[in-house]
Length: 134
Image 1 (cartoon, one colour):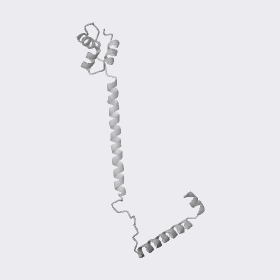
Image 2 (tube, rainbow, N blue to C red):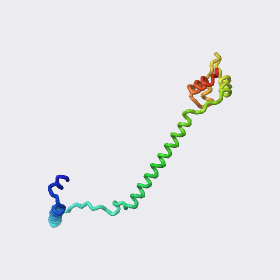
Image 3 (tube, rainbow, N blue to C red):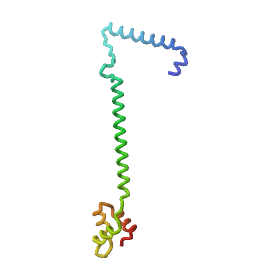
Image 4 (spheres, helix red, strand yellow):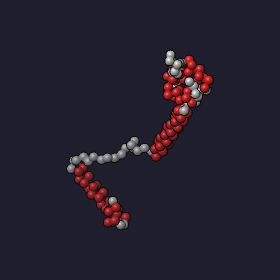
């Protein structure tokens, strides 16, 4: 297209060329129709065109849905961060749980405490080390 614009600097010559091609196309269509051939035309139906107001509404609805999704993701990540580092129970409560779930050999059963508190056994082991529960 840039090459064509460089060839024809004035817009008048471009308009003349376009009109010439449209005239030739019209003559071909007329010849085919007079000789009994059907020429398929591709006219857009009015139903295919979406009014500008509807497209603006659709874009706005899409933006609102994306905003709601982004807000939901923010809420989820904040909740995950809060649960990622849960507060450990105080040392007396942890000592009670350790005493009630000791194994026969006297070691703390971290898995049993984890089941009661709904945590991972490694988390319970870290809490017990932090609070010096033996």
